[in-house]
Picture (cartoon, rainbow, N blue to C red):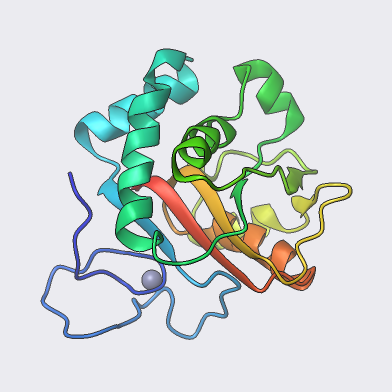
Length: 198
Ligand SMILES: [Zn+2]
C-alpha cells in the first residue's frame, strides 16, 4: 500500500482527514527533532510488511532487490532533487548482526546507493544492545535509545548532508536518535528514508 498525503510533514504519520499545506502531528508538535523529516513510499502492511519481515527474520536474502526497489521509489519521490553526501544505514548491535548474519538496513541501503549513485557509509554504531523498539511504548522507546548510538570511529559528518536508511520506521524515534548523534557532530542536514512506514 502506498503512503499518500496527507501525512505529518516531519514523521509521515498518515492523517485521515484532509489537511491543507504542511502540518505536524500531535506526536511531533512541541518535540525537538534532530531529523529534518522521514519519508517512505509505502505503508508497512500486506505484502510490503511480509517481505520486510521475511528478509529480516527468515533471512530470505533473495528479497533484497524488492526492498531496494521500494526504497528507491521513496528516494525518487522525496529525495532525488537534493544533494546527499552519503546514505547512512541505521546500525544494529553487533550481537544482533551476528545472529542475523547481516544488517538489513545496510543491505537495502547498499542496493539503493549503487542505483542512485550515492555512497553508503557505516557512520554510526550501536553501542548498547536494546530490546526491540517494536515491543515498547513511546516513552520507553525514547528511554531505550539513550546512549545506544554513537559515531563510528573515524567517521566525520561535519558539513555533510546525510540520509539515514532503515527498513521500517514507526515513531521515527530510532532515526531521530541517529540524527541527533550526527547533528551534534556537525552534520549539516539529516533526513531519513525507509522502505515502509509502520
Ligand atoms: Zn509527526
